[in-house]
Length: 207
Image (tube, rainbow, N blue to C red; front, top):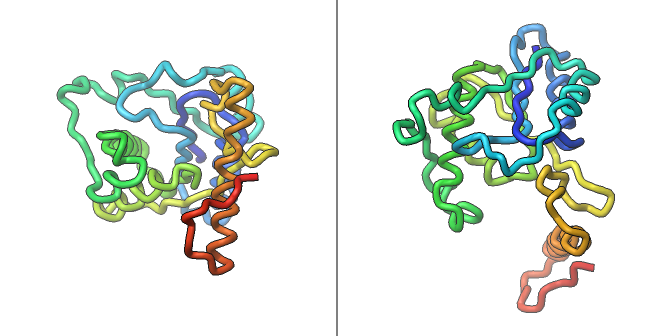
């Protein structure tokens, strides 16, 4: 059985996770559950995400997803957030993105841990777009001796290199034109590092 959990509207990046999970499901009859987390509610179901439920259901039906799990806030936090037990991964949660977003990865670890406990999957698939998130989840699974395997799936991108995201829908035209420049800059830097460059006092162009 393939179980897909999500928040916000699905795009091709999310559907790629479903397709990747199905590849692994066909390799072994011993796999009873596959968990694909298409997106994460951090500490509550957020109204900030776009919702296209009918469209999402149709997309999942085309991929022959067996179960769509749609828990409510009360299902996840029955005693309320103020009484909620937390899961926190030290070190990894406090650097890079986590340094400017206190509590963010505590929320990630907590909700993912709860979903794993509720569903008891054999495998879980996460996009590499949220790379720090992926490492936090891997560390949590190892530290808490959870009996499942975490798979990272390569980022699905738009035609101009921008990583697919539900929140891209909120970019205006000018922001949408600028956004792919970050990926181009990072790609150029990676190529120059592989070529031996170590001095980045003058940054490479994103063009």
